[in-house]
Image 1 (cartoon, rainbow, N blue to C red):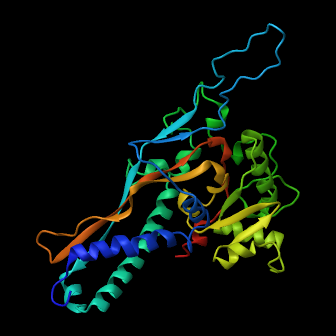
Image 2 (cartoon, one colour; image 1 turned 120 degrees about the vertical axis):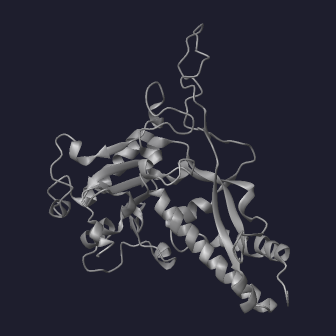
Length: 349
């Protein structure tokens, strides 16, 4: 590589040495939930991602008399969800000027490492924005599933969201302002801070846990809050900032996580992207047991051949990841909507 780049060699180095490391590091410093889901990600090799629905009632149960009968047809006919994979693509570019500025093997490797760091940050930023984007505002219609799709009243996994489908496949989306006999206004900070009202923030956390447990028979494993709501909750639970309520292991990893009643309560710095206004903040309860990343083994961050861009002194390669973000039980996740969370808390300008 002293006088001219061998792009086949560069591609081989990127695929064998750099991209596996990028995959290992992605989300580990930026997104607590996604780093945990990626650690347990599964592989698939078919044209569809088919996941078993283990909560489906596929076995009939009853006490039998001596000559009694038991139905053979299962109570619930849905035993799997089928998702279409989608290609998440980024690129890495080598302008001619870069070639001329980095001619030694050491300089080339340093440049590749810099480009890999940029690639990882770009993927994290894009996914963080995409995952919270409302379904009607997505930049692409054939991308991965988002949280909005998981909890919204829309068909997903090849199964309708309503009608003659199991209750556990119907979304659980709660607008707090629509609840009857609900005391307090969750769109006001003063009511979020008032322990005498149902809108008191710690009570909202307990309520979303209860609703999720009642619907899915499973306790959620993680509560996601906007940064504003998390800071507000911390000020309520730990006004002296002693740190006693924090998950120290998560804190050491760089994440702000409150540990309370056996639950991790996470501050998600990108969750505000799902808001349409200051009074459209959200509280999301999820059960990680029913959330998965699926990746195709032949396209888990793989670089294509480098090609020259017409009319440009640039060679580029695409970095592809083929898969999807799926759920196997929609009612294991609940979202509260209509909570005060000022947008200028994140963008003061």
